[in-house]
Each structure stands twice: as structure tokens, then as C-alpha cells.
Amino acid sequence: MKKTIFINAHIIDPTQKIDKLGTLTVENKKITEISFDKFNSKYEDNNEVINCKNFILSPGFVDLKCHLRVPGDEHKENLSYASEAAASSGITSLVCMPNTNPIIDNVSIVELLQRKARKESHVKIFSTGSITKKLEGNELSEFGLLSEAGAVAFTDATTAVNNASVMYKALKYASAFDILLMQHPEEKYLSKGGSMTSGTLSTELGIKGIPIEAEVIQVERDIRLAEMTSGKIHFLNISTGLAIDAIKSAQEKGLKISCSTSPHYFSLDETNIKKWRTFAKLSPPLRDKKNVANVKLGILNNVITCITSDHSPHDTDSKRLPFEIASPGSIGFESLLPLTLNLVKEKKLGLLKLVELISSNPAKLLNLKAGSLKKGSNADIVLFDPSKKINLSSALIKSKSKNFPYENKKAFGKIYLTMVDGKIIFRDGKFNI
Image (cartoon, rainbow, N blue to C red; front, side):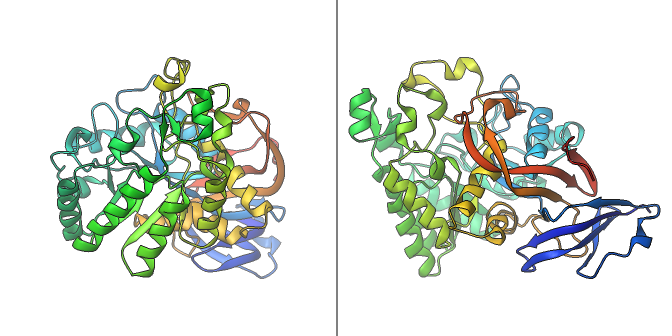
């Protein structure tokens, strides 16, 4: 069996606390060896040898929150486009949200998505199931059956389960199966009709605001419910210091509480929507500079343990509208690594921690066979140069939609190669091995 051997690689693997130069060997879809001895050139015969030139070789990235729009909204995105965009971004595993058409609230839709993924995607695609049927917040989905069919977690996507009694029952039900619930952190009635964060800027622009307290109220309620039920809950897209403080207190009490954010919430702030830029309309909305700093601190202090792309493709008709009625969400695959690397450049975290946030921790949270370079692991690997300067712009986008809020933003991070199950699915044409 022909081997693929990565030599002169700066290997980073948080699961083994590896951060040094070495050689990694792949054979028959698996990682078979990691060595830190000098490479013996006799192994070049009949094998593919890739000279990594001291670039970073790490586990492929695991994106635990993205919207793939399949089934039902293929005019915005499809699995082929999403796979190509993810592969070029170093992402080897995608976890899609259930707010599709029809909703992923029954076994047949989970199985449909799996069949389509096998045919149309080179990256691994995992499905979540909805907490409530039709995302209506009333009747629980069949967690046990959906979990057996392959759903890796349960969430109502961009809508929080508003009814406390329903969420209590969901946590009780989920705890019986050791299932993770993921919650959108926004109280329904406080945020209703709002399009951006409340404050001076929302008043100046004449846009109805959403108070930052809408986030922490939702978070604190669900923390109480998790404590009552011994349930596990993960909060998506945390964006305020108030919520981070509440989650930190819960974690210190030993509750099964975790959270993630996306690069938008530490790279953009509310001023980016001046002139009513709908590409910067998100849910939760962009916050002020103080809360951007709080999110960075939450990452540094290990309260926020995962960073997701929050990839949310929208077609032109959904975005070229008055701000209040435009759909919230932004493209996110291509900016995941570069914007997270900006935290490294700011000397807020190291590369080992970066890979943990976007690969190892998401995989561990969802019990996926990913996020590690241990011997015998699936050969899901990315090779990248963290020091290569790039220019973020819509020209980078491989997604079917182009709602990208970054134009001519300076960043770092060039993906040279992405491998899934030992097969190279992306290779930059300018990378000479």
C-alpha cells in the first residue's frame, strides 16, 4: 500500500501536546506513525513524500456550526459548493444546523442528508437534529431515534427554545441519552423586531435595537435548567461579557456548560454596519468594542472553548433589502482560520491553543472521530502557513453565495493542503512539494 509521508512538518496536535518538527505517515486512510527523528530518504521509493517546509501540519478543522441550506434552499448553497469552500479553508468536518426545508426533525431527513453528503461532499458532514418539531418550540423531537440515525447534537438553530417547561423536558430527555443540546443565546421577546445592538448607534441609524441583556437572560435561565436536570448545554455564538461571566460561574460550579463564538464577534463590531451594510447583519447582532474585548478575554480564559465559522450563506435577494428585513448571517468558512490567527498575531494565544479551539475541542464536544493526529486516527489533516499575509475579500469565496462582510481586510493564514481519510481533497496550485 502506497504511503503519504509528510516531512519537515511543524506538527501541532493538542490531544498529544505536540508542537515541534517531525514526520507524519499516512497509510490506508489512517495515521500510522509520527516520528521526530531525521527522515530516511530510502522511504521515498514508491511513496508520496510531501515536503511541508516547516509549515504547520495539524488535525483538520471541525466546524460545529454551519448552515448548508440542504435540503430546500439549494439556491443559496449546496453540498458540493460547501465542500469545496470548506476543503480550501482546512475544514475536514462540518456540523450542519437543522433549520432546513424540511426541518431536520425526523430520521428520514437525517438519512437523506447523509446519502447526499456521501455523493456530493469530499469533507465529512454531520447533522444535528432539532430540539423541537418544526422549530416551533412546543413538541420535542425524537432524540433517541435521531441520535441512532446519526444526529450528533440537538438545537433549534437560530431560535432559542423559549418555553422554559419545554426546555426543562428537553434537558431531562437528553440527559437520559447523554445527548448535547446547543442553544441560541437570545431571549425571544426582548429581541423581537430588533436588528442590531441597542445603543447610541442604533438610535442614530434609526434601527430598532436588541439589548445585550437578551443574551444573558437566555443563558442564565438555561444554566438553571441544566442544573435542575444534570443536562448538558452548549451556547452558540456568545457575544457579550455578561453571558461569558454567567457561563464562567456555572463552569466553576461544575455544571455541564460550554460555549463557542465565531470570528465575527471578535473581528467586527457594531460600527461595521454603518451605512446599513446588511452583510454585517448577524444573529446575535454585532456588539460594541467593549464586548468584542470581552469575547477575546473569554477565549483567553478558557470560558469559550470552541470557535466556529457560523457559515450562513444567503442569496442576493435575501441581503439586498432594507436592513430591518434583510436575513441575518454571513459566509464564514474562508475567514475561520485567518481571523482566528489574528488572535495569535495579537499575542493572545498560541498555535497549539488555536488548533484546540477550531479542531480538537469541537471534536471532543461532539464525540467525533476527528481533531487528533494520534496513531490510528483518521487521516484528516491540514497543512497551512500561519505567517502568510492574505487579503480577505469576496474574491476568495468558493461558496455559492457571496454575503461576505470582509473586503480588503488584512489577515494571515494560507491553506496549502487538506486531506480527508488519507485522500488529498485540496491542494494549492502554488505549493510546490
